[in-house]
Figure 1 (tube, helix red, strand yellow):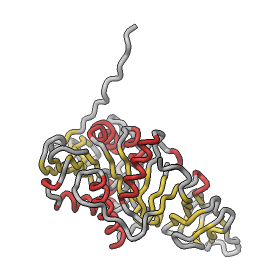
Figure 2 (spheres, rainbow, N blue to C red):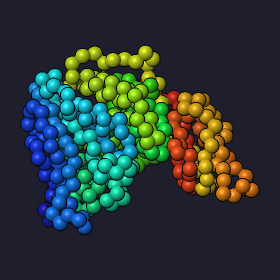
Figure 3 (tube, rainbow, N blue to C red):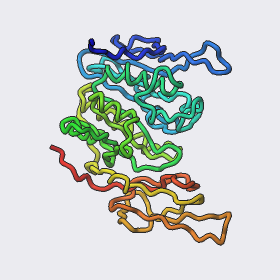
Figure 4 (spheres, one colour):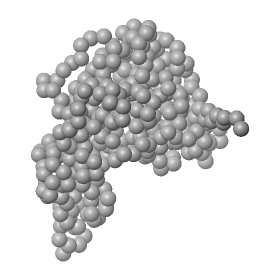
Length: 343
């Protein structure tokens, strides 16, 4: 018997621009989409390419979740203002990938209810969110050398502004991810593996051997001048670090802390339906067994508040926002000093 080969996945997506041309182009990824009110329509995902000379290709993604805003703001600025002559290589700029969720201000797509960041590697013959992630997997990541995935805490978490490191089993790749995240220059850089979930954009980019950096820029459904400034400076820093832009990396006054989430013990989950009262501020040192907060049940005043405890030593990295919780909601996240090696 002959050797069987897997045929390439067939997609109906097409673009209104040439992804491999030089200069500045802005347009859309078009994915045929036929909902109730549009027989022959298309979902339009904004995309721009700025290419000039020789150098790496860096992919910048915003709007992975539709209620996270700093990334789309900063990527939109780059599309409008960056001079192609200043670029050595190519930028693929995608400010609103989960476009239906971005327009609705929701974490998940209102069209199919799917979390785009748990849909990779996608499926070009499934629902629209899976088609978007399939396009990223099959068409965008193979063109790239590096990937910046710009997140914040969304509507449910308030997170210390950080660069996020996707762990790689390859030591050299892992080191390059750490170096790029430290160059970003956020107050901290944190290694996060999303509880081992392989379906994220950053995990998929790592499997494609791209230098991969993500962010968490505050959250709580808000945008602040501070988080936008950190994100804007960090993006330029990483592009300089990778050699796409000229100039020195702008170092913060204090070197970023290098942290990691200590596995499943990093997370504090709600145990009941109620209102979460946190006991600590971001950056405070906490200990395993220490009370993280109480869950109150206002509609049952005789119900004693339930106590939630931390399961790891470290600092409070993220906190539930808003405080209305249901069982299983993430109420707090602890980060600890990185225990690995940089060599």
